[in-house]
Amino acid sequence: MDIRMIEFRLLSDGRGGLIAIEQLKDIPFEIKRVYYIFDVTEGVERGFHAHKKLQQVMFCPHGSCKIRLDDGAEKTEVLLDSPDKGLLVKSNIWREMFDFSPGTVLMVLASDYYDESDYIRDYAEFLRSLKDINLEEM
Ligand code: TYD
Image (tube, rainbow, N blue to C red; front, side):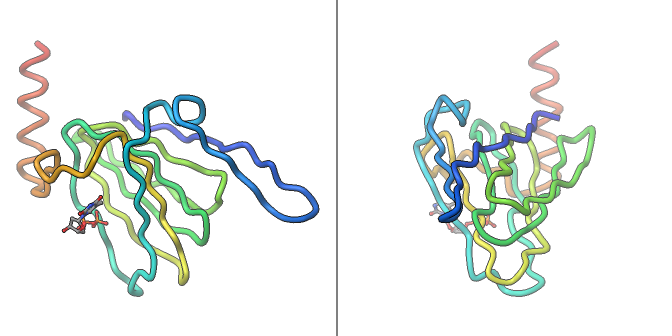
C-alpha cells in the first residue's frame, strides 16, 4: 500500500517539546494546504473518502486517533499517538479516521488546495476507479 510512516525529528530539550516540519525535506511534496480536525465528538468516525491525486501527511500534535486505510487490495490500520509520528498517504487510498481520544488534534499537510472534484466519497465508485486505473496501466 502506498503509505509510509515519517518520523519527525524531536528538537525537544529540558524546556519542552519542539518539532519542525519543512516541505521537500520532511514532507515529500510542496505543502499547499494545512488543516486540522479538533473537538471531535466522542465515537465519531470521519473521512470515508479517497483522493484521485492529493497526497497528505497526517499526524496528531496532541492526542491520538486511528486511521483505517484501504487501497482496494489491502486494508490496514495506523495509530497516530505521538507528535513525532507522521503518516504519508498517497492518492487512491480510502481512509477513515476514528478512535479519537478526548482533546485530540489531527493535523493534515496536503499537496494541493481544497478541490471537491479530487474526492471520491462513494466506496463502490472508489473500487470502480481502481479498476479503471489498472486498465489504463495495462
Ligand atoms: P470532510 O471531507 O467531510 O472532512 P473529513 O474528511 O474529516 O470527514 O470536510 C468537511 C467539510 O469541509 C466539507 O464540506 C468540505 C470542507 N473542507 C474544505 O472546505 N476545505 C478543506 O481543506 C477540507 C479538508 C474540507
